[in-house]
Amino acid sequence: MQDVLTAICDPTRRAALSILWDGGEHCVCELMARLDASQSRMSRHMKVLREAGLVIDRRDAQWVRYRRNPDLAPELAAVVDAVLAVGDKRELEVA
Image (cartoon, rainbow, N blue to C red; front, top):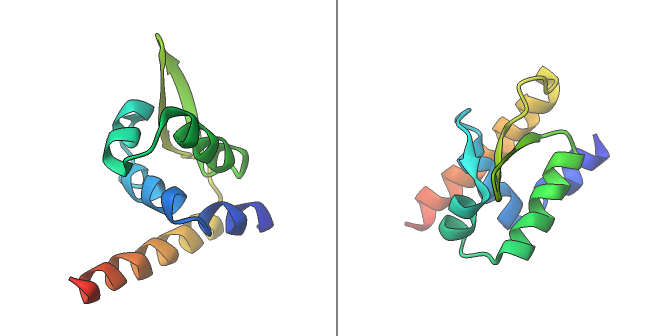
């Protein structure tokens, strides 16, 4: 659980999770563009998410594609759902 909490405490990682949480597969190049992050920075963030078990990856030629870990324990998925929901609510309040 500590790895998950550490992984989701960073705003960039939460934003990446928000993109991936729909269940689709996304190329690291897409994440880089959408989050305005360099390749090395995005790779470091994705490594943290992968090591926490939140996402899985697949190599596709020179790119890596990420998606939500379908085997994530329901309790951990619920924690991420709640954190992302609070973030979405805050964004709406600011807008």
